[in-house]
Length: 206
Image (cartoon, rainbow, N blue to C red; front, side):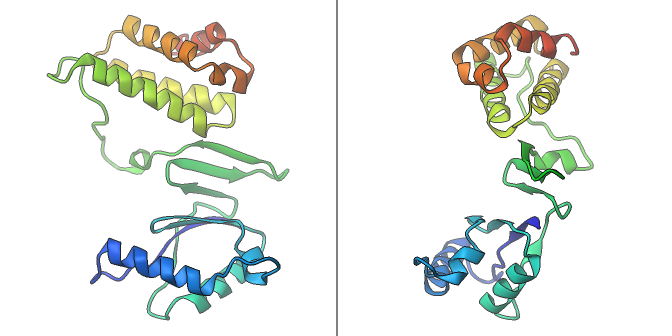
């Protein structure tokens, strides 16, 4: 079972207070000591504020533990898309039939029924450098999240197409793409593909 859940937070208290209460709660109920059975049951559980990520083949055990942990008026909301696929923060995580874990970029706005303005238009009064710096940062984020080269290419092409739609010249985009790859040699090392070939794979299908 792989899944994400949302930690229940009462509506009448602030996130700051609820965060402190949860920290105290976990510190009391989850003593991480050597040989403690509860720590082994939840050793693949990760939390960021009110989001939990848990990966295990013992779904019933996780549900039982969390049911005992929270008051009956508070319930965890399961948000994963399937038994072996889920999104946690900006990462999509999938366990294949062979047991391998694949990760790729997840953007919540992709699920919206309406278009979202993500980056500044080329002809706006926002400096062009800010848009290009955002492009650079997004390519780095895609590289860090995508375990497979084809997923990296697909997401980077989507990003480049969006910038083309908001009137960024193709020459400028290609230049920044080359610059990002040259400044980040880890991309080429991770996928075992040279920078020129990466650029060609992206540009030829824009």
